[in-house]
Length: 570
Image (cartoon, rainbow, N blue to C red):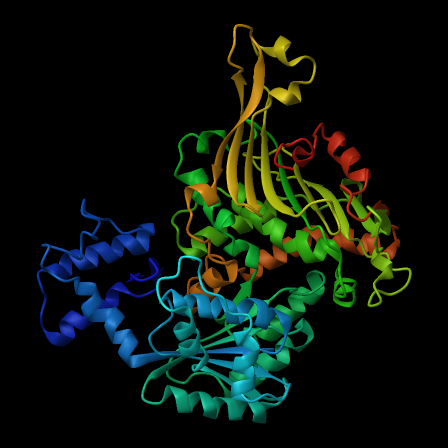
Protein backbone atom coordinates (compact mmCIF):
# COMPACT_ATOMS: atom_id res chain seq x y z
CA UNK A 1 0.00 0.00 0.00
CA UNK A 2 1.36 3.43 -0.90
CA UNK A 3 0.50 6.23 1.47
CA UNK A 4 -1.39 9.32 0.24
CA UNK A 5 0.25 11.72 2.68
CA UNK A 6 -1.89 14.75 1.84
CA UNK A 7 -5.26 13.20 2.62
CA UNK A 8 -3.93 10.51 5.01
CA UNK A 9 -5.20 7.63 2.90
CA UNK A 10 -3.59 4.52 1.52
CA UNK A 11 -3.45 3.66 -2.15
CA UNK A 12 -2.89 0.19 -3.59
CA UNK A 13 0.55 -0.69 -4.77
CA UNK A 14 2.73 -3.76 -4.72
CA UNK A 15 5.72 -4.75 -2.62
CA UNK A 16 7.08 -6.27 -5.82
CA UNK A 17 7.39 -2.75 -7.25
CA UNK A 18 10.07 -1.85 -4.70
CA UNK A 19 11.96 -5.08 -5.24
CA UNK A 20 11.87 -4.49 -9.00
CA UNK A 21 12.96 -0.87 -8.57
CA UNK A 22 15.96 -1.86 -6.47
CA UNK A 23 17.03 -4.63 -8.85
CA UNK A 24 16.60 -2.34 -11.86
CA UNK A 25 18.90 0.25 -10.31
CA UNK A 26 21.19 -2.49 -8.92
CA UNK A 27 21.17 -0.88 -5.50
CA UNK A 28 19.69 -1.93 -2.21
CA UNK A 29 19.66 1.10 0.07
CA UNK A 30 19.87 0.31 3.76
CA UNK A 31 16.24 1.33 4.08
CA UNK A 32 14.94 -1.10 1.44
CA UNK A 33 14.74 -4.30 3.56
CA UNK A 34 12.79 -2.49 6.28
CA UNK A 35 10.72 -0.79 3.58
CA UNK A 36 9.73 -4.16 2.16
CA UNK A 37 8.91 -5.49 5.61
CA UNK A 38 6.81 -2.44 6.31
CA UNK A 39 4.87 -2.81 3.09
CA UNK A 40 4.34 -6.52 3.79
CA UNK A 41 2.82 -5.48 7.14
CA UNK A 42 0.55 -2.93 5.47
CA UNK A 43 -0.61 -5.46 2.90
CA UNK A 44 -1.23 -8.12 5.52
CA UNK A 45 -2.63 -6.12 8.41
CA UNK A 46 -3.98 -2.93 6.80
CA UNK A 47 -2.02 -0.46 8.90
CA UNK A 48 1.45 1.03 8.97
CA UNK A 49 3.65 0.83 12.06
CA UNK A 50 4.90 4.19 13.27
CA UNK A 51 7.70 5.29 15.54
CA UNK A 52 7.15 7.51 18.55
CA UNK A 53 7.67 10.61 16.40
CA UNK A 54 4.74 9.62 14.22
CA UNK A 55 6.74 8.54 11.17
CA UNK A 56 6.43 5.03 9.70
CA UNK A 57 9.24 2.81 10.97
CA UNK A 58 10.30 1.92 7.45
CA UNK A 59 10.43 5.51 6.24
CA UNK A 60 12.58 7.56 8.61
CA UNK A 61 15.91 6.47 10.05
CA UNK A 62 16.91 9.94 11.26
CA UNK A 63 15.31 13.34 11.49
CA UNK A 64 17.30 14.57 8.47
CA UNK A 65 16.55 11.63 6.17
CA UNK A 66 13.66 12.10 3.76
CA UNK A 67 11.05 9.33 3.33
CA UNK A 68 12.29 6.82 0.77
CA UNK A 69 8.75 5.99 -0.31
CA UNK A 70 8.15 9.51 -1.60
CA UNK A 71 11.15 9.25 -3.91
CA UNK A 72 9.94 6.06 -5.55
CA UNK A 73 6.39 4.97 -6.26
CA UNK A 74 4.39 8.08 -5.40
CA UNK A 75 6.53 10.48 -7.42
CA UNK A 76 6.91 8.03 -10.30
CA UNK A 77 3.12 7.61 -10.51
CA UNK A 78 2.53 11.35 -10.56
CA UNK A 79 4.97 11.82 -13.47
CA UNK A 80 4.09 8.82 -15.63
CA UNK A 81 0.34 8.31 -15.21
CA UNK A 82 -2.91 10.23 -15.43
CA UNK A 83 -6.50 9.53 -14.42
CA UNK A 84 -9.41 10.45 -16.67
CA UNK A 85 -12.78 10.49 -14.90
CA UNK A 86 -15.81 10.41 -17.18
CA UNK A 87 -19.19 11.14 -15.59
CA UNK A 88 -21.78 9.53 -17.87
CA UNK A 89 -25.10 11.32 -17.36
CA UNK A 90 -23.31 14.55 -16.49
CA UNK A 91 -26.40 16.73 -16.90
CA UNK A 92 -28.43 14.80 -14.31
CA UNK A 93 -29.16 15.77 -10.71
CA UNK A 94 -26.88 13.16 -9.13
CA UNK A 95 -23.90 14.33 -11.16
CA UNK A 96 -24.53 18.01 -10.45
CA UNK A 97 -25.38 17.66 -6.75
CA UNK A 98 -23.03 14.88 -5.66
CA UNK A 99 -20.41 13.62 -8.10
CA UNK A 100 -18.85 16.85 -9.37
CA UNK A 101 -18.86 18.44 -5.87
CA UNK A 102 -17.21 15.29 -4.47
CA UNK A 103 -14.51 15.40 -7.15
CA UNK A 104 -13.86 19.05 -6.39
CA UNK A 105 -13.65 18.30 -2.65
CA UNK A 106 -11.00 15.65 -3.36
CA UNK A 107 -9.11 18.14 -5.53
CA UNK A 108 -9.42 20.78 -2.79
CA UNK A 109 -7.94 18.32 -0.27
CA UNK A 110 -5.10 17.38 -2.70
CA UNK A 111 -6.28 13.78 -2.78
CA UNK A 112 -6.57 13.46 -6.56
CA UNK A 113 -3.52 12.52 -8.67
CA UNK A 114 -1.39 15.38 -9.95
CA UNK A 115 -2.48 14.63 -13.51
CA UNK A 116 -6.22 14.17 -13.87
CA UNK A 117 -9.02 15.20 -16.21
CA UNK A 118 -12.79 15.20 -15.72
CA UNK A 119 -15.14 14.69 -18.65
CA UNK A 120 -18.90 14.99 -18.65
CA UNK A 121 -20.80 12.82 -21.15
CA UNK A 122 -24.53 13.06 -21.86
CA UNK A 123 -27.00 13.52 -24.70
CA UNK A 124 -27.58 17.19 -23.80
CA UNK A 125 -25.75 19.59 -26.12
CA UNK A 126 -23.31 21.62 -23.99
CA UNK A 127 -19.98 23.34 -24.51
CA UNK A 128 -17.08 22.96 -22.07
CA UNK A 129 -17.84 26.42 -20.70
CA UNK A 130 -21.54 25.63 -20.24
CA UNK A 131 -20.63 22.50 -18.26
CA UNK A 132 -18.29 24.53 -16.08
CA UNK A 133 -20.96 27.14 -15.42
CA UNK A 134 -23.48 24.42 -14.57
CA UNK A 135 -21.34 22.54 -12.07
CA UNK A 136 -19.66 25.67 -10.73
CA UNK A 137 -22.95 26.60 -9.08
CA UNK A 138 -22.87 23.45 -6.94
CA UNK A 139 -19.25 23.52 -5.76
CA UNK A 140 -18.48 24.44 -2.16
CA UNK A 141 -15.29 24.60 -0.12
CA UNK A 142 -14.61 23.11 3.26
CA UNK A 143 -15.58 25.18 6.29
CA UNK A 144 -11.95 25.11 7.47
CA UNK A 145 -10.59 26.92 4.41
CA UNK A 146 -6.85 26.72 4.03
CA UNK A 147 -6.43 28.70 0.83
CA UNK A 148 -8.37 30.80 -1.61
CA UNK A 149 -11.50 28.87 -2.52
CA UNK A 150 -12.18 30.75 -5.74
CA UNK A 151 -8.72 29.97 -7.12
CA UNK A 152 -9.12 26.26 -6.36
CA UNK A 153 -12.53 26.19 -8.04
CA UNK A 154 -11.15 27.84 -11.15
CA UNK A 155 -8.24 25.39 -11.28
CA UNK A 156 -10.64 22.46 -10.98
CA UNK A 157 -13.09 23.76 -13.57
CA UNK A 158 -10.29 24.23 -16.09
CA UNK A 159 -9.77 20.45 -15.91
CA UNK A 160 -13.45 19.76 -16.69
CA UNK A 161 -14.56 19.12 -20.27
CA UNK A 162 -17.69 17.93 -22.01
CA UNK A 163 -18.61 15.60 -24.85
CA UNK A 164 -22.14 15.13 -26.11
CA UNK A 165 -23.18 11.75 -27.44
CA UNK A 166 -25.71 8.96 -27.46
CA UNK A 167 -25.40 6.29 -24.80
CA UNK A 168 -25.59 3.47 -27.35
CA UNK A 169 -23.25 4.93 -29.98
CA UNK A 170 -19.80 3.38 -30.29
CA UNK A 171 -18.90 6.16 -32.70
CA UNK A 172 -19.67 8.82 -30.06
CA UNK A 173 -17.58 6.97 -27.48
CA UNK A 174 -14.75 6.69 -30.00
CA UNK A 175 -14.88 10.49 -30.31
CA UNK A 176 -14.70 10.68 -26.51
CA UNK A 177 -11.69 8.35 -26.62
CA UNK A 178 -9.87 10.74 -28.97
CA UNK A 179 -10.53 13.68 -26.64
CA UNK A 180 -9.31 11.67 -23.66
CA UNK A 181 -6.12 10.74 -25.50
CA UNK A 182 -5.48 14.39 -26.29
CA UNK A 183 -5.40 15.07 -22.52
CA UNK A 184 -3.45 11.89 -21.67
CA UNK A 185 -0.65 12.31 -24.20
CA UNK A 186 2.72 11.00 -23.03
CA UNK A 187 1.36 9.33 -19.91
CA UNK A 188 0.06 5.95 -18.83
CA UNK A 189 -3.71 6.41 -19.01
CA UNK A 190 -6.09 5.19 -16.30
CA UNK A 191 -9.80 5.67 -16.88
CA UNK A 192 -12.77 5.72 -14.51
CA UNK A 193 -16.35 5.83 -15.83
CA UNK A 194 -19.13 6.82 -13.41
CA UNK A 195 -22.54 5.66 -14.69
CA UNK A 196 -24.96 8.27 -13.33
CA UNK A 197 -27.73 7.03 -15.62
CA UNK A 198 -30.87 4.84 -15.46
CA UNK A 199 -30.10 1.12 -15.15
CA UNK A 200 -31.79 0.26 -18.46
CA UNK A 201 -28.88 1.85 -20.35
CA UNK A 202 -26.01 0.51 -18.19
CA UNK A 203 -25.19 -2.27 -20.62
CA UNK A 204 -25.23 -0.06 -23.73
CA UNK A 205 -22.78 2.38 -22.14
CA UNK A 206 -20.50 -0.37 -20.85
CA UNK A 207 -20.47 -2.07 -24.24
CA UNK A 208 -19.56 1.14 -26.07
CA UNK A 209 -17.00 2.29 -23.50
CA UNK A 210 -15.28 -1.10 -23.26
CA UNK A 211 -14.99 -1.46 -27.04
CA UNK A 212 -13.94 2.05 -28.00
CA UNK A 213 -12.95 4.08 -24.93
CA UNK A 214 -11.05 1.70 -22.63
CA UNK A 215 -7.48 2.49 -21.67
CA UNK A 216 -4.82 0.55 -23.57
CA UNK A 217 -1.98 1.52 -21.24
CA UNK A 218 -3.54 1.47 -17.75
CA UNK A 219 -6.64 0.35 -15.88
CA UNK A 220 -10.30 0.92 -16.76
CA UNK A 221 -12.95 0.88 -14.01
CA UNK A 222 -16.69 1.47 -14.04
CA UNK A 223 -18.79 2.71 -11.11
CA UNK A 224 -22.39 1.49 -11.31
CA UNK A 225 -25.15 3.22 -9.33
CA UNK A 226 -28.10 1.37 -7.81
CA UNK A 227 -30.66 -0.03 -8.45
CA UNK A 228 -28.98 -3.26 -9.49
CA UNK A 229 -32.12 -4.85 -10.90
CA UNK A 230 -35.58 -5.34 -9.38
CA UNK A 231 -35.23 -8.94 -8.21
CA UNK A 232 -32.89 -11.93 -8.36
CA UNK A 233 -33.58 -12.60 -12.03
CA UNK A 234 -33.11 -9.05 -13.35
CA UNK A 235 -30.09 -8.49 -11.11
CA UNK A 236 -28.48 -11.69 -12.38
CA UNK A 237 -29.22 -10.71 -15.98
CA UNK A 238 -27.61 -7.31 -15.43
CA UNK A 239 -24.49 -8.86 -13.86
CA UNK A 240 -24.10 -11.36 -16.69
CA UNK A 241 -24.52 -8.62 -19.30
CA UNK A 242 -21.92 -6.38 -17.63
CA UNK A 243 -19.47 -9.28 -17.38
CA UNK A 244 -19.63 -9.78 -21.14
CA UNK A 245 -17.63 -6.55 -21.39
CA UNK A 246 -15.93 -6.17 -17.98
CA UNK A 247 -14.29 -8.36 -15.37
CA UNK A 248 -15.63 -8.38 -11.82
CA UNK A 249 -12.58 -6.40 -10.68
CA UNK A 250 -13.50 -3.59 -13.09
CA UNK A 251 -17.06 -3.24 -11.75
CA UNK A 252 -17.54 -1.00 -8.70
CA UNK A 253 -21.16 -1.25 -7.50
CA UNK A 254 -21.66 1.79 -5.34
CA UNK A 255 -23.91 2.05 -2.30
CA UNK A 256 -23.22 5.50 -0.90
CA UNK A 257 -24.35 4.48 2.59
CA UNK A 258 -21.26 2.31 2.88
CA UNK A 259 -19.23 5.51 2.56
CA UNK A 260 -20.92 7.18 5.51
CA UNK A 261 -18.48 7.96 8.32
CA UNK A 262 -20.40 6.10 11.03
CA UNK A 263 -20.94 3.04 8.83
CA UNK A 264 -17.23 2.83 8.07
CA UNK A 265 -16.59 3.23 11.80
CA UNK A 266 -18.66 0.11 12.60
CA UNK A 267 -15.79 -2.33 12.31
CA UNK A 268 -13.44 0.01 14.20
CA UNK A 269 -15.94 0.36 17.04
CA UNK A 270 -16.40 -3.36 17.30
CA UNK A 271 -13.00 -4.88 16.53
CA UNK A 272 -10.72 -2.34 18.23
CA UNK A 273 -12.65 -1.94 21.51
CA UNK A 274 -12.50 -4.83 23.93
CA UNK A 275 -15.54 -3.52 25.77
CA UNK A 276 -17.80 -4.24 22.75
CA UNK A 277 -16.49 -7.32 20.94
CA UNK A 278 -17.30 -9.84 23.76
CA UNK A 279 -20.87 -8.47 23.93
CA UNK A 280 -21.50 -8.74 20.16
CA UNK A 281 -23.64 -11.90 20.17
CA UNK A 282 -26.97 -13.46 21.10
CA UNK A 283 -25.74 -13.94 24.66
CA UNK A 284 -25.91 -10.22 25.45
CA UNK A 285 -27.85 -8.57 22.60
CA UNK A 286 -31.64 -8.81 22.66
CA UNK A 287 -32.34 -7.17 19.29
CA UNK A 288 -30.81 -4.90 16.67
CA UNK A 289 -32.77 -2.14 14.91
CA UNK A 290 -31.83 -0.49 11.64
CA UNK A 291 -33.91 2.62 11.10
CA UNK A 292 -34.13 4.92 8.09
CA UNK A 293 -36.62 7.76 7.79
CA UNK A 294 -37.10 10.83 5.63
CA UNK A 295 -39.32 13.77 6.50
CA UNK A 296 -40.29 14.41 2.87
CA UNK A 297 -42.17 12.49 0.21
CA UNK A 298 -41.30 11.63 -3.37
CA UNK A 299 -41.55 15.31 -4.37
CA UNK A 300 -41.82 14.79 -8.12
CA UNK A 301 -39.64 11.67 -8.20
CA UNK A 302 -42.64 9.40 -7.87
CA UNK A 303 -42.33 8.07 -11.42
CA UNK A 304 -38.94 6.55 -10.65
CA UNK A 305 -39.78 5.54 -7.10
CA UNK A 306 -43.06 3.84 -8.05
CA UNK A 307 -41.16 1.31 -10.14
CA UNK A 308 -39.12 0.20 -7.12
CA UNK A 309 -40.71 1.06 -3.78
CA UNK A 310 -39.10 1.50 -0.39
CA UNK A 311 -38.00 -2.14 0.05
CA UNK A 312 -35.93 -2.14 -3.14
CA UNK A 313 -34.84 1.48 -2.75
CA UNK A 314 -33.60 1.32 0.86
CA UNK A 315 -33.89 -2.06 2.57
CA UNK A 316 -32.44 -4.46 0.03
CA UNK A 317 -29.29 -2.38 -0.36
CA UNK A 318 -28.54 0.30 2.27
CA UNK A 319 -29.91 -1.46 5.35
CA UNK A 320 -28.91 -5.00 4.41
CA UNK A 321 -25.35 -3.86 3.68
CA UNK A 322 -25.16 -2.18 7.10
CA UNK A 323 -26.59 -5.31 8.72
CA UNK A 324 -23.94 -7.49 7.07
CA UNK A 325 -21.14 -5.21 8.27
CA UNK A 326 -22.61 -5.15 11.76
CA UNK A 327 -23.09 -8.92 12.09
CA UNK A 328 -20.08 -10.35 10.26
CA UNK A 329 -17.40 -12.43 11.94
CA UNK A 330 -13.91 -11.04 12.39
CA UNK A 331 -12.29 -11.01 8.93
CA UNK A 332 -8.85 -12.49 8.37
CA UNK A 333 -7.55 -9.03 7.49
CA UNK A 334 -8.74 -5.61 6.33
CA UNK A 335 -8.27 -6.68 2.74
CA UNK A 336 -11.38 -6.01 0.64
CA UNK A 337 -11.94 -9.65 -0.29
CA UNK A 338 -11.62 -10.86 3.32
CA UNK A 339 -14.22 -8.34 4.49
CA UNK A 340 -16.61 -9.06 1.62
CA UNK A 341 -16.24 -12.81 2.21
CA UNK A 342 -17.50 -12.37 5.77
CA UNK A 343 -20.42 -10.20 4.62
CA UNK A 344 -21.48 -12.87 2.14
CA UNK A 345 -21.42 -15.50 4.90
CA UNK A 346 -23.84 -13.39 6.95
CA UNK A 347 -26.21 -12.88 4.02
CA UNK A 348 -26.20 -16.58 3.17
CA UNK A 349 -26.98 -17.45 6.79
CA UNK A 350 -30.13 -15.29 6.84
CA UNK A 351 -33.64 -16.68 6.57
CA UNK A 352 -35.59 -15.72 3.49
CA UNK A 353 -37.98 -12.95 4.49
CA UNK A 354 -41.59 -14.09 5.00
CA UNK A 355 -44.71 -12.02 4.38
CA UNK A 356 -45.79 -12.46 8.03
CA UNK A 357 -42.65 -10.60 9.06
CA UNK A 358 -43.28 -7.58 6.81
CA UNK A 359 -45.49 -4.52 7.20
CA UNK A 360 -45.92 -2.08 4.31
CA UNK A 361 -47.43 1.39 4.34
CA UNK A 362 -48.08 4.38 2.11
CA UNK A 363 -48.41 7.99 3.21
CA UNK A 364 -51.71 9.79 2.78
CA UNK A 365 -52.65 13.45 2.67
CA UNK A 366 -52.71 15.35 5.92
CA UNK A 367 -53.32 18.89 7.15
CA UNK A 368 -51.00 20.18 9.86
CA UNK A 369 -50.72 23.71 11.16
CA UNK A 370 -52.91 24.98 8.36
CA UNK A 371 -50.58 23.42 5.79
CA UNK A 372 -51.89 20.78 3.42
CA UNK A 373 -49.49 17.86 2.93
CA UNK A 374 -50.05 15.70 -0.17
CA UNK A 375 -50.62 11.96 -0.37
CA UNK A 376 -48.21 9.76 -2.33
CA UNK A 377 -50.80 9.22 -5.05
CA UNK A 378 -51.28 13.00 -5.34
CA UNK A 379 -47.84 13.15 -6.96
CA UNK A 380 -48.60 13.70 -10.69
CA UNK A 381 -45.78 11.31 -11.64
CA UNK A 382 -47.34 8.44 -9.65
CA UNK A 383 -49.95 6.19 -11.34
CA UNK A 384 -53.43 6.52 -9.87
CA UNK A 385 -54.29 3.75 -7.44
CA UNK A 386 -50.63 2.78 -6.96
CA UNK A 387 -49.97 0.21 -4.22
CA UNK A 388 -46.24 0.88 -4.07
CA UNK A 389 -45.13 1.05 -0.42
CA UNK A 390 -43.44 4.21 0.84
CA UNK A 391 -42.86 2.56 4.23
CA UNK A 392 -41.82 -0.94 5.23
CA UNK A 393 -40.86 -2.70 8.45
CA UNK A 394 -39.39 -6.18 8.55
CA UNK A 395 -38.00 -8.74 11.00
CA UNK A 396 -34.98 -10.68 9.78
CA UNK A 397 -32.99 -13.49 11.40
CA UNK A 398 -29.46 -14.83 11.01
CA UNK A 399 -29.30 -18.57 11.56
CA UNK A 400 -25.76 -18.96 12.82
CA UNK A 401 -24.15 -19.60 16.19
CA UNK A 402 -23.55 -15.94 17.00
CA UNK A 403 -27.00 -14.53 16.17
CA UNK A 404 -29.46 -17.40 16.41
CA UNK A 405 -32.83 -16.10 17.66
CA UNK A 406 -31.88 -12.40 17.69
CA UNK A 407 -34.40 -10.32 15.69
CA UNK A 408 -32.90 -7.74 13.35
CA UNK A 409 -35.69 -5.24 12.86
CA UNK A 410 -35.64 -2.84 9.94
CA UNK A 411 -37.90 0.02 9.09
CA UNK A 412 -37.65 2.59 6.35
CA UNK A 413 -40.07 5.21 5.18
CA UNK A 414 -40.77 8.50 3.49
CA UNK A 415 -42.87 11.43 4.70
CA UNK A 416 -42.32 10.55 8.37
CA UNK A 417 -41.96 12.87 11.36
CA UNK A 418 -38.17 13.08 11.28
CA UNK A 419 -35.09 12.48 9.17
CA UNK A 420 -32.73 9.89 10.57
CA UNK A 421 -30.58 6.85 9.86
CA UNK A 422 -29.33 4.88 12.82
CA UNK A 423 -28.45 1.51 14.28
CA UNK A 424 -29.85 0.71 17.72
CA UNK A 425 -28.51 -2.23 19.73
CA UNK A 426 -30.70 -3.19 22.68
CA UNK A 427 -28.97 -5.39 25.24
CA UNK A 428 -30.58 -8.02 27.43
CA UNK A 429 -31.94 -7.30 30.89
CA UNK A 430 -29.55 -7.70 33.81
CA UNK A 431 -30.26 -11.10 35.43
CA UNK A 432 -31.46 -10.71 39.02
CA UNK A 433 -31.21 -6.93 38.83
CA UNK A 434 -30.82 -5.60 42.37
CA UNK A 435 -32.49 -2.34 41.37
CA UNK A 436 -35.52 -3.65 39.53
CA UNK A 437 -37.85 -2.12 42.14
CA UNK A 438 -36.53 1.29 41.24
CA UNK A 439 -37.57 0.78 37.63
CA UNK A 440 -41.03 -0.63 38.33
CA UNK A 441 -42.54 -3.24 36.06
CA UNK A 442 -41.16 -1.79 32.82
CA UNK A 443 -37.75 -3.42 32.62
CA UNK A 444 -37.20 -1.94 29.15
CA UNK A 445 -36.41 1.34 30.89
CA UNK A 446 -33.44 -0.40 32.52
CA UNK A 447 -32.09 -1.85 29.27
CA UNK A 448 -28.70 -0.70 28.06
CA UNK A 449 -28.78 0.54 24.48
CA UNK A 450 -26.00 1.44 22.05
CA UNK A 451 -27.03 3.88 19.31
CA UNK A 452 -24.96 4.66 16.21
CA UNK A 453 -26.54 7.66 14.52
CA UNK A 454 -25.43 7.69 10.88
CA UNK A 455 -27.26 10.92 10.02
CA UNK A 456 -27.96 13.70 10.77
CA UNK A 457 -25.74 14.95 13.64
CA UNK A 458 -23.46 11.90 13.61
CA UNK A 459 -23.05 10.41 17.07
CA UNK A 460 -22.45 7.26 19.10
CA UNK A 461 -24.12 7.07 22.47
CA UNK A 462 -24.64 4.41 25.10
CA UNK A 463 -27.63 4.41 27.43
CA UNK A 464 -26.68 3.39 30.98
CA UNK A 465 -28.41 3.35 34.35
CA UNK A 466 -27.20 5.89 36.86
CA UNK A 467 -28.07 7.12 40.37
CA UNK A 468 -29.52 10.62 40.49
CA UNK A 469 -27.44 12.69 42.96
CA UNK A 470 -29.20 13.10 46.31
CA UNK A 471 -30.04 11.33 49.54
CA UNK A 472 -32.66 9.04 48.05
CA UNK A 473 -32.02 6.05 45.80
CA UNK A 474 -33.48 7.28 42.51
CA UNK A 475 -32.20 5.88 39.23
CA UNK A 476 -32.09 7.47 35.85
CA UNK A 477 -31.24 6.40 32.31
CA UNK A 478 -28.41 8.59 31.03
CA UNK A 479 -26.38 8.73 27.83
CA UNK A 480 -22.64 8.54 27.40
CA UNK A 481 -22.55 10.60 24.24
CA UNK A 482 -19.91 10.98 21.54
CA UNK A 483 -21.26 13.76 19.35
CA UNK A 484 -19.00 14.01 16.31
CA UNK A 485 -19.57 17.74 15.79
CA UNK A 486 -18.21 18.44 19.27
CA UNK A 487 -15.38 15.90 19.35
CA UNK A 488 -14.28 16.30 15.72
CA UNK A 489 -14.97 19.89 14.62
CA UNK A 490 -13.52 19.28 11.15
CA UNK A 491 -16.18 18.84 8.49
CA UNK A 492 -16.99 15.19 7.74
CA UNK A 493 -16.38 14.30 4.08
CA UNK A 494 -19.38 13.32 1.99
CA UNK A 495 -19.77 9.59 1.34
CA UNK A 496 -19.24 10.10 -2.40
CA UNK A 497 -15.82 11.60 -1.76
CA UNK A 498 -14.64 8.50 0.06
CA UNK A 499 -16.09 6.12 -2.51
CA UNK A 500 -14.75 8.00 -5.52
CA UNK A 501 -11.28 8.08 -3.99
CA UNK A 502 -11.50 4.35 -3.23
CA UNK A 503 -12.46 3.61 -6.83
CA UNK A 504 -9.54 5.67 -8.15
CA UNK A 505 -7.18 3.84 -5.80
CA UNK A 506 -8.66 0.42 -6.58
CA UNK A 507 -9.88 -0.15 -3.01
CA UNK A 508 -12.99 -2.38 -3.23
CA UNK A 509 -13.80 -2.81 0.47
CA UNK A 510 -16.84 -0.50 0.37
CA UNK A 511 -18.20 -1.70 -2.96
CA UNK A 512 -20.59 -4.60 -3.51
CA UNK A 513 -19.40 -7.86 -5.03
CA UNK A 514 -21.70 -9.81 -7.34
CA UNK A 515 -22.22 -12.70 -4.91
CA UNK A 516 -23.14 -10.20 -2.16
CA UNK A 517 -25.74 -8.77 -4.49
CA UNK A 518 -27.12 -12.21 -5.33
CA UNK A 519 -27.42 -13.17 -1.66
CA UNK A 520 -29.19 -9.91 -0.77
CA UNK A 521 -31.75 -10.33 -3.55
CA UNK A 522 -32.46 -13.91 -2.51
CA UNK A 523 -33.65 -12.60 0.85
CA UNK A 524 -36.20 -10.19 -0.57
CA UNK A 525 -37.29 -11.48 -3.98
CA UNK A 526 -39.91 -14.02 -2.72
CA UNK A 527 -41.70 -11.50 -0.47
CA UNK A 528 -41.58 -8.78 -3.14
CA UNK A 529 -43.16 -11.18 -5.64
CA UNK A 530 -45.85 -12.15 -3.12
CA UNK A 531 -46.68 -8.53 -2.32
CA UNK A 532 -47.09 -7.71 -6.00
CA UNK A 533 -48.85 -10.92 -7.08
CA UNK A 534 -51.41 -10.65 -4.27
CA UNK A 535 -51.68 -6.87 -4.71
CA UNK A 536 -51.49 -6.37 -0.97
CA UNK A 537 -52.69 -2.89 -0.06
CA UNK A 538 -50.28 -0.87 2.11
CA UNK A 539 -51.51 0.53 5.43
CA UNK A 540 -52.07 4.27 5.11
CA UNK A 541 -50.32 6.67 7.48
CA UNK A 542 -50.52 10.48 7.65
CA UNK A 543 -47.75 12.51 6.06
CA UNK A 544 -45.47 13.61 8.90
CA UNK A 545 -46.46 10.84 11.35
CA UNK A 546 -44.38 8.04 12.87
CA UNK A 547 -45.62 5.54 10.29
CA UNK A 548 -48.26 2.81 10.24
CA UNK A 549 -49.45 1.17 13.47
CA UNK A 550 -48.65 -2.24 12.01
CA UNK A 551 -44.92 -1.61 12.56
CA UNK A 552 -45.50 -1.51 16.32
CA UNK A 553 -47.40 -4.80 16.23
CA UNK A 554 -44.56 -6.39 14.28
CA UNK A 555 -42.02 -5.30 16.89
CA UNK A 556 -44.30 -6.45 19.73
CA UNK A 557 -44.53 -9.88 18.07
CA UNK A 558 -40.86 -10.34 19.01
CA UNK A 559 -41.14 -8.55 22.36
CA UNK A 560 -39.37 -5.47 21.01
CA UNK A 561 -40.13 -1.77 21.33
CA UNK A 562 -38.82 0.55 18.64
CA UNK A 563 -36.04 2.52 20.31
CA UNK A 564 -36.49 5.71 18.31
CA UNK A 565 -39.97 6.34 19.76
CA UNK A 566 -38.83 6.97 23.32
CA UNK A 567 -35.31 8.31 22.79
CA UNK A 568 -34.52 11.82 23.93
CA UNK A 569 -32.72 12.16 20.60
CA UNK A 570 -35.86 11.30 18.58
